[in-house]
Length: 467
Image (cartoon, rainbow, N blue to C red; front, side, top):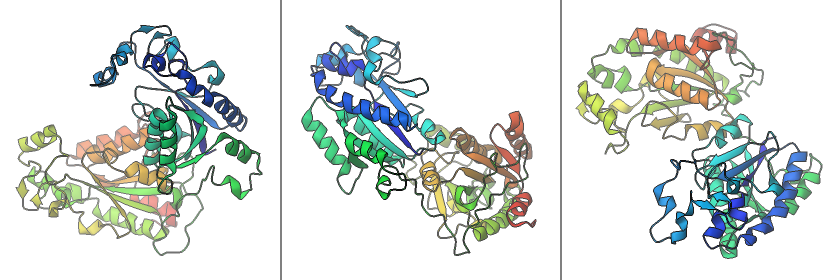
């Protein structure tokens, strides 16, 4: 139930004469060797009720998602201009055309997701990762064409996102046997730098083994990293729920230290101390310092009981190369330009005194700190990978400011499938009205972004005593 079969681009445009592949001068029959092994694996995966996903490379009819350099790269043969033009199989590599469809031998059944992708990789500009996460997938069995291009790109993307990737060698093919062989070798080199390689026979034989057999483990391992204990007694596995609005959190009643974290957002000198960014803009830092004591109480409770604890810091590299020009310009308009000198060093610059987390809620040595260039905690960071690697599905949110960085992170996490709880007394905004509005927004539509509670209710649920 944690393994998915992904069959990549087994399309008419690549496997039959008159399509894109043959238009480039390739012998499409070389890809046919993968069809029968793929068919056997597909039948077995379906019988095991495994999640089966198909991909198709192609573009919108108006070609607005076709990069000009893909249409014709400098030095490429003139035949690369064929994308979007009429051919024996319809407009080449265009969605909805006959050539874009999957070959009949491997045609998807109802209920099997089809990923329509504009590029070589199956993750870029698609909802593939959303589907995998929603189904709890950790292992990818990868088949399809061509080995060195779309298959390899997808495996590389999956590997970097924390998925365990297994290539079924005989279920893949290339227009060049040399490229196929090299691509297969690359995956398993350096101890499996991109994953593992096996074949359809080994996979099919493994499915016939008893489920208790140790031999099954290499095909699909559901082991997760051990959660932190912080030196305390073994973690409790008894689920708890939090009294929250508009529903008891989490929705499924499954909150345990192993699957739950708190993210303390941007409790930095620049936002919470005299001479920092917020102070320089003329706002009352008394507002942003108000959550300190509640956060301290929550951290003490969660550390003792072994929950995952993460912190974030907003800031930019010293040369400001990761700071968008419009963000820097806006900060200058209000007299606190990012990168300029202030009482706490250069404003919002990594390594400066103002960028550090205030000592009252400073991270312990083993607690993860996410350095982010934007308002949300996911863009431009490895936060999602860290959470998935630890098996975290529940996120508790605290920090500043409620309406900006906290809300952005909560919205992003919600869209990515995490169950979110905001502790309203552990958050603050530079404008109390904005704080109140942000809290209210969360509770609309039955909890459109998650739920809201307080530090006291959280601590009481975990320990049985209020703070």
